[in-house]
Image (cartoon, rainbow, N blue to C red):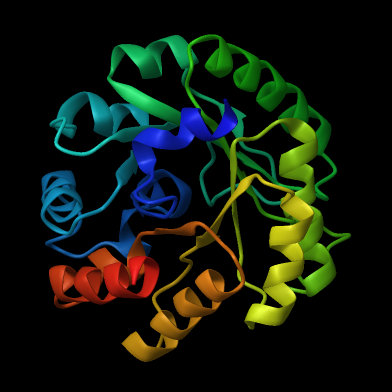
Length: 249
């Protein structure tokens, strides 16, 4: 049943998702230019670029989602302004996400934060509500906080993947460890939960980015949930084509 819930976002068991929740998370000045500040531009890339789904916050989905690719709504968020131990709180209900046409929901957990307990609790409720409606609950799990020294180490990334399994996530979005061998330990720790690599900041070169993607697939990952490495690119559809080959071929 778990794999059936993810089916709208999969192609031959693999996937590439286009993420666009950075406007809330980072602010418009850091990531956007005159092209990609327009959500319609992102929606066009998602449909023409062959993505298996697009990830929006509810406000963007309400105004710009056109139904051409499956929608996943991010149910929590935070700004980049507060300091201290990170926390991302729920801003959208599962019910509202369904009303906007979502086929899945996502939620960020900062594993290791002094405030992780609140995020665990919120995700637990979200997961149950999503599953009652047959929707997958996807966990963005990012180890972060004073106790986390290296958030891409083999041990920490595997802990993030395992936390997703233990909390009932249908898929996890985690950082790449840097090589297929160590990332394969995270895939094993997830024990059947779909594993997506977080795209992160735009890589220095296309080959740097694609090497990471190929490593994820070699390690047994499901695919990528990427944003800036596509919609900050000078040729978004060109890099999307290369990404498709790395994931599906």
